[in-house]
Length: 337
Ligand code: AHG
Ligand code: MN
Ligand code: MN
Image 1: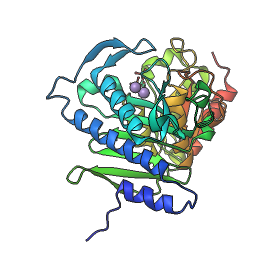
Image 2 (image 1 turned 45 degrees about the vertical axis):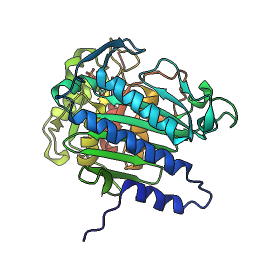
Image 3 (image 1 turned 135 degrees about the vertical axis):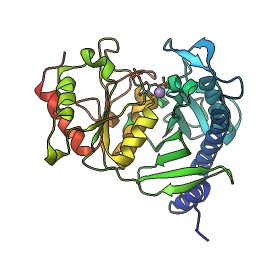
């Protein structure tokens, strides 16, 4: 019989390698797994029950909230609270941080940042969506209620980061800074099972992912890089393939496995970029680097950026090392608009 390693087993085996570990972190990941399974269940019956469509509310950034956005947000918050080790959460769907003021959770060591449902515009059309998360140690003393400063940590302070992709199968991919591992949900036993150990992304990718409908609004360096991707050159396997889903998790996951670059630059309509540093860019950047890729805002390493507000947005470039070096060369050479 093939040996199957479940997510919980894997996490416990890793915990055994850290003598001072108390089990709190493993418990947190266990609850992340439960929340992911609940969201998976709802995503999979989305066409059958009244969960498609808009919730009739807007999130803090004035974007329409979908019913599944709200469901995923509430489910993750409830599971994190139930873990008893997380003292607060910053979510794309909540204007302010959510802090637990009572019970065990108040003294939890960890804080959690999340995009509970990434790719909301794809829900109603049965296209892959995801959840993105990152975990930090709190900075404020245990015994006090979590503070905003606990959440304004640079990405390089992350203890762990991951995403769940609700796709043709549901996968959970995460890193604790010691490589990247992927687990596929086996629905027959209700467990995430190790399917993609030690993921490494190719150094030379052949896919570029960018919303080319915004072409006119891009910085000159990005426009020139797109043209470079489309030119024919056998040695560098160009022209590259263009792929863009519009769910960061799905676009990144494909490029991680196959080799490619994802770009969401600053544009006229989004002068500081569209994607959020805390919930999208930092966790994805941590995973990208751990798999051998790079992630920058075009100039600076994402993980070195000091967040000023929890909902801050940044231009985002991530993917295969050599593609990233090339696009940054273009950005340096051509003046930004
Ligand atoms: P969210 O659904 O969490 O708001 O995120 C949507 C994001 C991201 O997933 C995707 O990469 C990007 O928005 C797509 O934006 P465009 O439609 O502007 O290309
Ligand atoms: Mn998102
Ligand atoms: Mn979202």
